[in-house]
Amino acid sequence: MGDKSHDPGRSREEWTRREFLKLAGAGAAYAALGGAGVLSLPRTVLAGPKVINLNFTVWSYSIDTIQDNINKFQGAYNGAITVKLNDVPWPQYHETMVNRLSSKTALHVLYNGGDWLPEFARAGWVVPLEDYLPRARTFYAPKIVGYALQDMTYNGKMYGLPYYADITTFQYNAQLLKDKGVAKPPATWEELADQAKFLRGKGIESPIAFEFAAGLPTTYDNFTAMMFGRGGEWFDKDLNPIFDQPKSAARQQLAWLADVVKQKLATVLPHETDVVKAMNTGRHVYTVLWNYNLADANNKAVHPLAGQFKVALMPGSTHETQGQCKFYNLTRYAVDQGQETVDAALKFIEYFGGEYQGQYSIAKRWAVEKGLGFGQLPLFEDADVKKSFGQWIDFDMFKLQASKARARRHAVWEGIFGEFARVQLVRAISGEAPVDEAIGAMAQKVKELRAQFK
Image 1 (cartoon, rainbow, N blue to C red):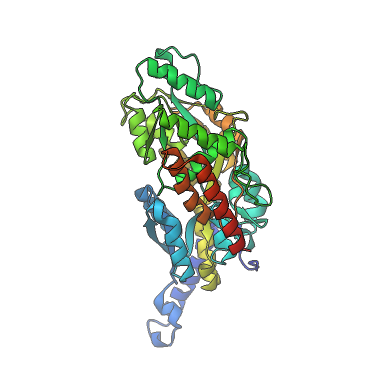
Image 2 (cartoon, one colour):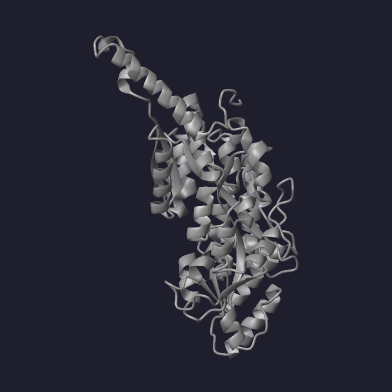
């Protein structure tokens, strides 16, 4: 049901002025009584303004920055809304949220993503933002990059505003490539394997470094982006699997990965931070990571080879990559607490993911200070963002690759499938299982899930 009483255009100044007038009126009434008869005053006047308490759950990234943003939000609303922050380690986030949401834990706003949205929405744990904040659709949607809007949409409804939107990029050490006599980065995966062999002959034992781990959700993302470079997809528009077809892009890419690892042309590391550190040793030239990692790799205050790393288009026939969005989502629990709680949660979501006083201040802060990608189109033209990004990436190349990005097709059961798929991907990449066996196991899992979630 939609929110008929909430005015999404109501500014903080209007809100605080109205609340102040209410309090001023109450104070005048008390003064007129000369302090007498205080016991006859309404309880709400005696207690002062009502404070709405919200619980906000995130995964464990840059918690100090999040808390500082919360402090600013609470100050902007004069303490009328307080926010308790809870964080969960990224690898356990999906499972933890399923447990908390299904048990109706007090939770008002959470980080969500396109891969989990269908599951959470179908279960009724989260609600469409546009039903309670109409300007999400009318004002914000036209200002959001396509892959981010796709990730925040389920059954035609927009569920949130972006916390962070990013693309997976093909990153390489341009200086090292030049020093070893390679004119330009590869255009295809096959050319990458050839360059890796050449570089081995030049003394770089393992030219490629990849982030893959069975327990890491990013494993599924990294593989998807590589497969997209070949023009592939996991599922068709009806969510039938196509990755198991004999000549599918997924099968080709998984076989390619298994082969370069077997030849020791590529090193597999368990986390993006390990990859960034390894790239800064000069022992590797190429990697595939979420784009924000390039900001870290090129941070001269931290890494010895900072400034040498660049982005090229994702190898493959189409040069596409994966784009995604993580966003602020309103819960059913919040709605069930009543209109005051909903209004407070909407103020919080809009402050964090939308405009406040005409600025995307929180999204811009993440971009400028942390190098995080963003889903808000105006930030692609923001002078401060372009200047900040320009210190560690060719901004025009970033925009070009972003224009070739797309989100995955998401299923209700994708969260479960993704957890299963990343195990099978690692088994095949490491040589523990044949590629055909891993592909077959994933296809069988899809069959089971489709039957389970009919």
